[in-house]
Length: 64
Image (cartoon, rainbow, N blue to C red; front, side, top):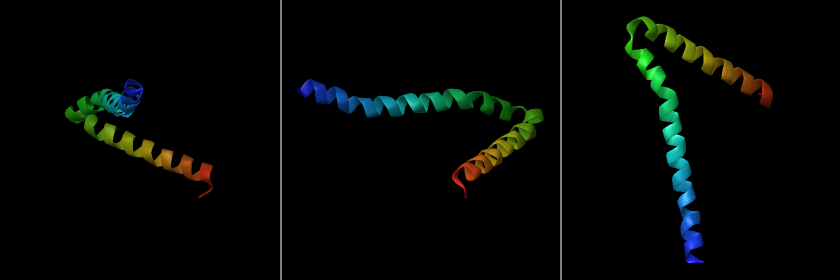
C-alpha cells in the first residue's frame, strides 16, 4: 500500500514538470522571433492583439 501512495504523490510533480516543459517548447519560437529586430514589433503587436481578443471573448462568455 505504501508503494501506491508514493506513486500517487509523484503525479503532481510529473504534471507540473510536463506543463512547464510544454510551455517552454511552445514559447521558444516566439523567443527566437524576438531576437530578429524586423519581427520584434510584429510579434509584440500580434501578442497584444491575441491577449485583447482573448479577454473580450472570455468577457462575453461570462457576461461581464
